[in-house]
Image (cartoon, rainbow, N blue to C red):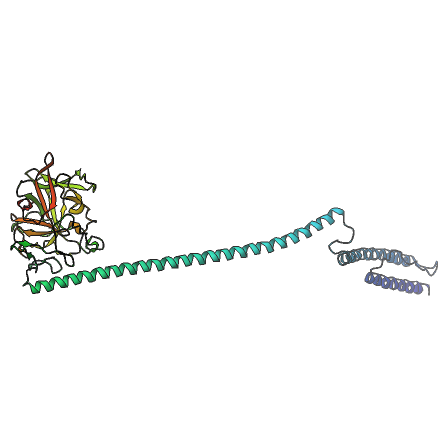
Length: 429
């Protein structure tokens, strides 16, 4: 039948075209030319023509879609094929500018890789240099620490040696005191660690002869017999306090550690004096000590202190035979004498004021004695005639009617301590 035939043939044509289009899409072929439509004859109805038109329209749309898919797929094949066959050169339809851009990007990527490798190398070198620096720094610190420990060990060894010598001298002194009936024992009010009391000797004529320091030859009292101070008896590493309380006046007239006194020359009546305006002219360039006027002034006062390395209690009684230091109250310097520098007018060993509260040596040590007999172990009191003997040289504090200038009377270190010019008297402040 005509209607049935038209419908069937239209149906069959649509199925055939749909199949071909599906196959074309799968293999990417372009089906731009539609198959010619077959008509059964003039008896086809208008509905059949609409179906035919609809089929053509649908076929055209699907065919166009198939072309678009085919073009994209072929383009993809070109890009992949180009990438595989041309290396970095892309395939397909690209402009020269895009090709150059792709080449630059490839070069930048290569440069970035090389730069990264170089940066890693530089970082490794830097890390190695830092490690070497840290190692050397640690090694230097360890070496410095070892040197410091060695120095401390050496200092400790030196202190132990000095302490051993001090104990040995103290033991020897105690043995002498025991053998000589206790002449050099300090009085009960004196601290047990204080007091270099030594047994005096006798001249052949029966006069007083002071003892020399332990381990040194007897005093010769000659200026050319040069003797040097013991460096271990200085203020360096000394346990002796740098300062003692100043004691003014005393109802019992007893001289104590810390007492402030003046020394009056027995023969001329002048007071032992120093000030900052007078210095020696002999080459030592130290502060000059001299006899000045007959009434004490502010530059005539001296504080009684223990010898270096002695540690008496403040206010301890001073007995004859004890080593002391005299510190000038106004300037803080110590009564001092030495060899090699002689007073210009007399040629005798000069006496100066030297050092300060932090600097003192054995040339600042003086042994206080009662004139003519020593009286070691007896208490030193105001008004007694005394001799101040320089511990290193054995010679005594001396003055005479020899004027350096107006009101400046020569004071030296000279002789055995037997002359009238060696006598001094103490006044308490």
